[in-house]
Image (cartoon, rainbow, N blue to C red; front, top):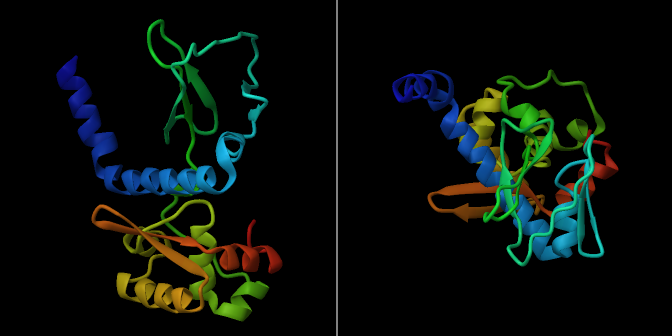
Length: 199
């Protein structure tokens, strides 16, 4: 059974793991930002449409009713690309309750091509390349390599666009180990909202 699972992993997961790992690390950075700027409520309320938090109580919409007291153990949040579009609660006696949720932007993780340009207002303002990059950064931060793969552009082209967006203070870099993730700045997010580029 172990050999079969290892073979399955080698065929079905390993080829996609670097991209998946970048996506998960990007989500972790975005969640950390939500926690730092908005506190626990901002972090937990944005995990999934079926999750809400208020008054120290985390509620999860399910087909059954149950109350779980963490008894001071806290809760572990696990971004999981295989949980999407659901959110799952894992509870085992003696262990910390764990909430597995789909990271931001996970539907785009499995798509390898970008949608064709549609002549939106933000593309007219920034150019199609920079507008596409800024839109891709909104769900979750990405590295230059990941953006190049998703948009089918060379890393050098993406790097040049990111430099221009950084100079315009529309994106912010954040280093995690050897990787540099880019995310929209507050100004970048506001620009996307003004031009209706958040959809």
